[in-house]
Length: 421
Ligand SMILES: *[C@@H]1O[C@H](CO)[C@@H](O)[C@H](O)[C@H]1NC(C)=O
Ligand SMILES: *[C@@H]1O[C@H](CO)[C@@H](O)[C@H](O)[C@H]1NC(C)=O
Ligand SMILES: *[C@@H]1O[C@H](CO)[C@@H](O)[C@H](O)[C@H]1NC(C)=O
Ligand SMILES: *[C@@H]1O[C@H](CO)[C@@H](O)[C@H](O)[C@H]1NC(C)=O
Ligand SMILES: *[C@@H]1O[C@H](CO)[C@@H](O)[C@H](O)[C@H]1NC(C)=O
Ligand SMILES: *[C@@H]1O[C@H](CO)[C@@H](O)[C@H](O)[C@H]1NC(C)=O
Image (cartoon, rainbow, N blue to C red; front, side, top):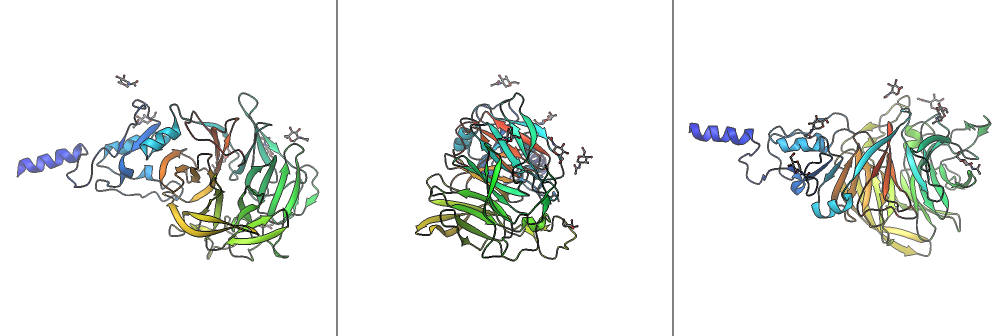
């Protein structure tokens, strides 16, 4: 008896627990990265963890798989320093390539999130936005200099509280959240705006309003968008403009719309998500993806509290896939199905790669999913990431933006941004 107890204690101490189904190590170094702590491989999605285990972090954006407490499995420590956490070894290692690296490029002003990063290829700049009350300009990273430089950027007329942006046919398309009148940062003259879709010509810095109402009512606050191969604009209209106090209390339920620039028609295409957020389409145009950030709960929040939501872990945090149907009015979507439940927070910025991978910014990193929602790699930044974009002539670098910093991810393998994204 004594021997058996000692043996059991020994097994616990070495992490080899006599637990049917558990086959250690849970985490190991990856093939080709034996001495490199920035890359770690997870076996079998860690589907059986040895007891006891718990996720206890009270901060919803820090409560993450890597912070799972698994005291009897020392291999879990390998996740602590890993920037690239590989869940699917064959597809994941192909994505991260042989020398992946995350670098912190800039500290940012910490009074706003950072959103809507759009790469302008022939100018080689990244333009992004600070959707926050009282911040009226965007910012621009000039990638032509070494090191790259960060500057304020203002358009004519200026656009307030841009939260989503995409590149299409030499223009930037913006989803903007604000309706409050604001002073032009250059002249101080009052600028009127309504939540809507705006177009920026980055060669002249001038903007055009494309849609700013729904039959005379205000949109809630367009959050993110993409333009399909037919030139139709699909955008999510959630409640975050009210959340950050740049517009009035919403008059519409959250929904996703199609705006058809050729006719001016604005049509609802989806209205079942709690707070539709990131949106994208597969490279072949047959599958649309929309993330839901229903974990931000607007009920019973006093208007004096900004942002005007509380975290509700039981709110929706799924990415949904839809089948795209053509109609004379433009694309419609059907066949709603959840394909991924964010393992931390919820997916904010969402982009589809040239290869069809679905990438989503969630909490402190970026999830790289297959087209069907399998987690292949988690890029862990360590600080909150709101959104990201592929940059460079080959669109093979990723720049990530968050409330506290801006990061560059380089040395990746076979993953590239779409040309028009
Ligand atoms: C990894 O480190 C070990 C010992 O520190 C060394 O023997 C081995 O050659 C290294 N492997 C590689 C691929 O650098
Ligand atoms: C993680 O990095 C820290 C600081 O460089 C180091 O002290 C620690 O040993 C590393 N942990 C692992 C598991 O590699
Ligand atoms: C923001 O930055 C300022 C200046 O560096 C600092 O004093 C403040 O603590 C920071 N706030 C947060 C929330 O990190
Ligand atoms: C951008 O403008 C703000 C004032 O609106 C200023 O505080 C900040 O330093 C400027 N940032 C850069 C990078 O020039
Ligand atoms: C547009 O803004 C950029 C960045 O501030 C500036 O370098 C460029 O000269 C501006 N272009 C025009 C046509 O004003
Ligand atoms: C919301 O914005 C309005 C208009 O700028 C301002 O008067 C009000 O104080 C703001 N409310 C909060 C809670 O920040």
